[in-house]
Length: 255
Image 1 (cartoon, helix red, strand yellow):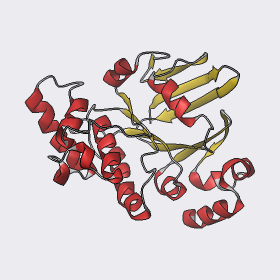
Image 2 (cartoon, helix red, strand yellow):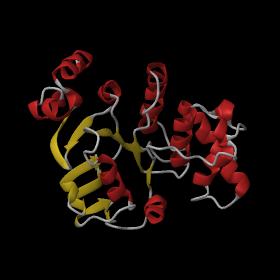
Image 3 (cartoon, one colour):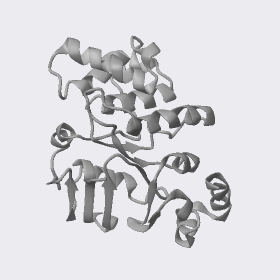
């Protein structure tokens, strides 16, 4: 399977704080992988470096064969690299359909066509019944789905999901897991293959259910990588993030 994203020795500091230190990883096309770690580990900063919202102090980012280090986010989005945000901020007064159409307009200048595409994307994330509702009236779970839908409407090759399950109750998490899984399995509606997904996530049972490969970040550095089952046995991951009780429970999920 072809490599879609390669990160080579990327670092970024803010004053004396080294938020990301010498991080290297590679994501293959057609996979669903995860980045985990404690709060303040540098995960969202790394996403900002990959997507162009921040420029690294060192290292480079290669996407779909092109060096995109420090390239503007809108250019990366047009090339097929999109991201969601941990704090969801929809256009509250616009409808769900209009919010999703904002993403579709990246490739579709015609209003009617963008709205049609929004309807198709809404069906993929379970928002069809909410299309004409003001975005400000959505529940937390609905807003999370809308954030995902807006990013999907840009037709990404690679989607960076930043805690798309945060703030959801267990039932909502269970309902969202197959939605995320389907992104990789289904076509993009334009004749292409499914979207490659790299997700930041703290809901570890979802990571165990979804991810093929996991990277673990702590204090800005990658401390481990492997399958979900492998990282639950890694002493460094248990010490820095999971704890012994959580690791034991997750091993039961993986068994």
